[in-house]
Picture (cartoon, helix red, strand yellow):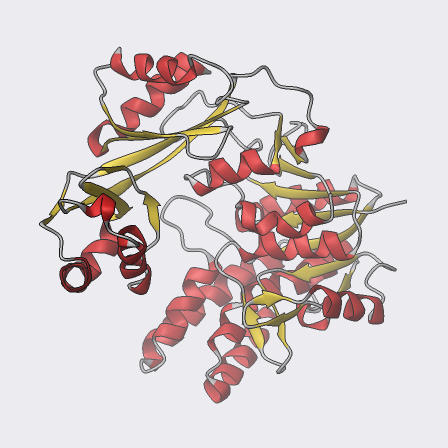
Length: 439
């Protein structure tokens, strides 16, 4: 019998009440073999997550008084959680954090310290569940930020990971050199997917505080609905354009292993959530049907004009290399015969604007470089939209009915998405209009 692997995010572990809901989900599933946990999340708007506090602690390395205040906050939160369960009576969280602070003072290893929130939470969850605690460093192997699958498999087999139910801290692994290495933020999703792959799970449950993946941002569209089933590709399109429940890169291990993912709400376990699986396992969608919307704002169009640029070999390659050399990811590049528009994150661009202008002037010799008004990029995700005539017209007509103009539109090589550039101040109205008109 293939097992189930559960991952609980920080919002599901913010206080004893929410932890009890997570515990109930696990105890109701006899197939559960592994539970991967984040550190505690925010209890309410404005509250600080464990990782935020620990990052602040590391940043105050020359300010011991400030560090002491932050550590007091961390200790108070974990003490509150531990006090909510009789099973954790043997674990002194204050003593634990005093010890971790001493280790950090000695080795100054930031990745080790900022991942202790997950480590401490996993210790507590293992006691509450009566499961074995397995540190991620015992089997997840990394090198230069890359996941080493074969080495991790050997380690998992060596420690008999598949033999008894366990709780594992997310967010980190161990390098071949023996150092703790943290993943990027949201790394517990990656840890859960790795664990599911190593255990050859039947299903990976990614548990959070919403009813699965929604067809729009609920902060902008209050009546956003859960998408019952979607492919990894469809999730990737939405996640890369702003949908934030789970990032597609974090699911690469389970996608590779062909393990389905269910995104479920810890606070509403009866809801079916969203099933994410291979495209071939999804019932045929009606061509042109719309699945969901995603978007982000705060982009700037950088317009580079030069007469005859279309005849100049590698002009575009030179431009993109300049932006890459300054650490900027290009979101979109509309072009015309004598001008290209590079759309990038506005705040990131402003930090390096002078250097980019200088490099463009030296290497590309443009006639002019100008910056347009701020844009939002909205992504419409659907089925076989390239094959179905009228989808783009429907989208544009929906926006036109609300007097929202479109600066750019691109389908590129994808048959499942269309990306629109609109005025930044029309972003929220556009999302609401498209949701009402298309979904």
